[in-house]
Each structure stands twice: as C-alpha cells, then as structure tokens.
Length: 352
Image 1: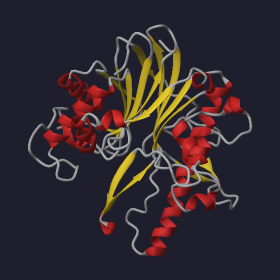
Image 2: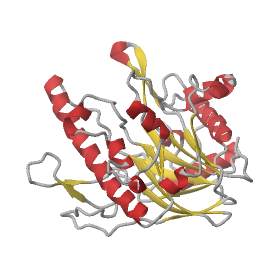
Image 3: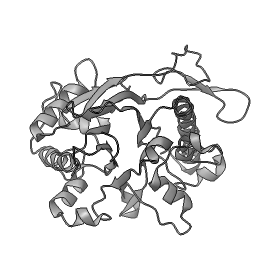
Image 4: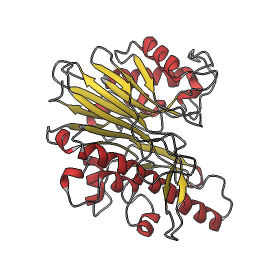
C-alpha cells in the first residue's frame, strides 16, 4: 500500500481489451458473458481489475489498452465509472490524442494528490512528415532501411504527454507509451512472417527513435521525466535485435555516453546485464502451438537522472515472482484473471 503522506506512487498497467468491458454509454458489462480473457467472464475480469487497482493504491496509473474514445464511446467516462464502482481514490481520468484503434492510452489519478493536464510537445508536422521530434499525432520521417530514402512513420496510439504537479508543488513530465507490436499478424508462410517481422521491427525502432528525440529535449531542459508503458520490446527479446544493433528500449533509455541524458529502469538494466537469461517479466502469454505459457519483459517505467538519484523503488506485481503477492492468493488470482500483463509501479518517496 502507498503511504500517501510521504511519497508518490505511479504505475503502468496494460489491461487486455479493457474496452470490451463497457457499453457505448461507458456502463460496465458486469455479466456472465465471456470477456476477451480465456474462460473468464466480464464480471470476473471487472472484479479482478477492481482488486488489482485497489491493491496498487497508486496516485496515478498509466493505463495501456484503455477503453475506446470515438463518436459514441468515451475513455474518460468509462474509467471514471469503473473507479467509482471500485471505490478508488485514483478516480479522475485524462487521455491525449485518441488512437485509430479501440485501445487508448489514459491516465487515472487521484485529484487530491495530483494536478494533471494533457500537454503535448513538438510542432505539428505536415503530411510529408518531419525528422525533428514532431508532435506525436503527426508524422515522423526516418530512413528505416538505410537506402537514403526516408519513410513516414505514425503512431497508431500516439504517446500521452502529461504535465503533473504534486500536492507539494513538484512538477513532473510523464509520457505514456504503447509502441508498435513486432508480431507478424496476418502473414502466411515463414518467409512472409520474417519479412513482416523485420518491417514491424523497423517501425517499432523508428517510433522509439522519435520518442528518444522527445526524451532528450526534456532532459536537456532539466525536466523531471517519467516514460512508462508497453514497449512491445525489451533487451534480448528476439533475434532481430542483432540485425538492428539495439532494442527500442535501449534507444529510449539512451545510448549516448553522457549519463545526464540517460533514463533509468532497473528491470531493463537487469535484462541488459544478464548473461544466463535471468530477467524480470511483466507479461504472460499462452502460445497455443506449444501448449504452454511464455513470459516477456515488455512494460517499463523509466525515470530521469534527478528522479533516479532519489532512490525510487520499482516493483513488478507478478503473481508468481513477488512473495508479497503469492502470500495473498486472492490478489495473485486477480492479477492472472485481470490481464495478460502485470502492473509495474515506482514509489518516489522523496516526491510529495
């Protein structure tokens, strides 16, 4: 639990198809119909999510795959109704630019602890695109395949850029991220799958390079920065990393020799330094052909050097790997029922 008087707890949580748990009016579908979770009803998933969010007790949560915003549906309305029903103190929601998918990036927070506003950075690019950190809902140009011809890149889910002010007056910048998936969805045959995997890897890396440009701008300006979310990537996660030199996560963390321009995430550091495959994980997927579960490190909370110097405490809420959770069977079961990802939190004890 979070000691509200002595610090700030922030979280990132990818909730698998949260959108499917609400109707167009933002009312929860608290019934016995199956959710998108395997053999789990919508009522069971909603109950599990209420347990998880309550246990997190975070001052602010970046929600990946939040409910949709479109002409009929409202992310904010759905999340605030969920928060009220669950009795959460993080009860106010905000989004940035809506996505072209049914999955938004949102932030649910305690208005008694935080003042939050959507504050996008960068100049809007033309349809031709721009190479210098344009606004995230426009177009980035980058030479993906080193043929001296730059391609245009767009985010299907534009990163959420927020300006946060704590109760004590501390100002923070937060960027919520849901980067391009590298999976070759729709490709038929091994060669087509490899081609699409490489193409998707290039796009994911280009998105991370775009994001890195924004990160460097904040760090050079002296901003206290957190970058969090699902990167669909991690150090050593697939064979294509050798082809491109770095993972997207490494790019966002920073490859420059200057430590003042580095972000910190201890779980990423463990994965980078591991020689025997020992690494934390934040997601658990069932792979039908192999008839087994696989785990991956996909979700991160990266912090700027000034915040890293305050000795923050990171935690992956993994039901099998965290003894504090395995000791609470109801919470462990809820984490497994709620999503295929597990939350990650950071406690900033010196930020009030």
